[in-house]
Image (cartoon, rainbow, N blue to C red; front, side):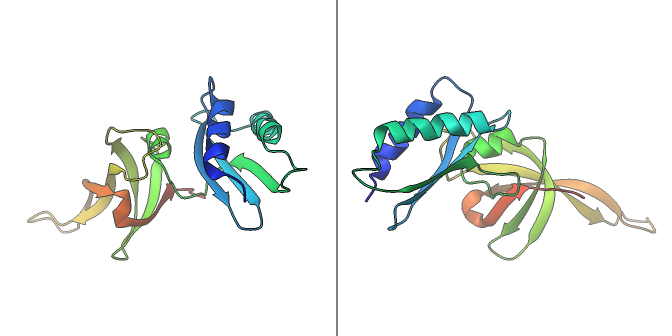
Length: 161
């Protein structure tokens, strides 16, 4: 079985000096490795190839065979670590809370912490209909909601078509 800790250190070494960050590493019992990367400026094929080459230098396929996929976390992927929340401050997000509320709004703030933290406090401004006293129709106002990533089934970039 592939040593996941050595794999994580190898990927971190390969990312040193770049604006890329590691989102996730998955290794299953069949030695299928999936490495997800992200960056504030995007992930290109050359960056993925460089990380792939570094992994292949450290992990000899003759000793233990494996399948390797290195790629971007993707624009439709759920946020997994604080760095992804930081990257998307000011952007529209979609989230589903554990109590079943689907919300769309603007990610306005992320609490301080390590970029690799998975437990993230954040604030989203969501539109809410409010009927002012004496008004005939409700108006839409922005309401700030403080949430934690553990309170959400998913948080992701909101693609509007």
